Length: 144
Image (cartoon, rainbow, N blue to C red; front, side, top):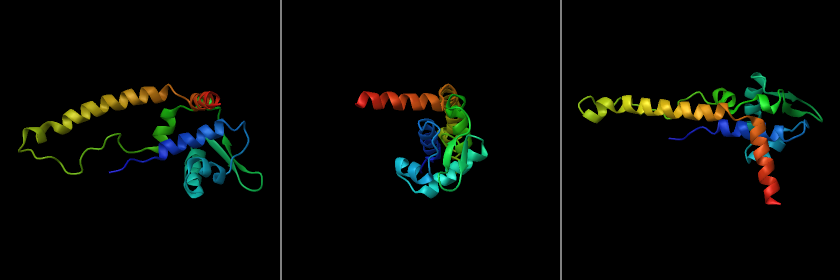
């Protein structure tokens, strides 16, 4: 069982573009920062572009930039765009009704997972790409 990293990669991409002072970044440049293949970045940029979060211009001197101010892009918006599965998926097979735990475990977990999702979404809604970029800058200043 593995979780998708599309959300974290998308935040990385958007954070890098927010730090770029409106200078277009190529998928190759972004891929080096993420430490992945440029094809992965182009797929993510395609999704972000269709959602109106980035603009990508081909050709010499081209690349991607933010289409909206970083302060107007919440992490919750990016999360909903990139992740379509549940935060914690339930088991693929239904548990046994012959066992007390099996009969009730999914109801209990759905309640707990729902509260966890709500708390996570509140934090993501209150955090913007500008916040991420600012924290990166603060960490960089502290490293010098």
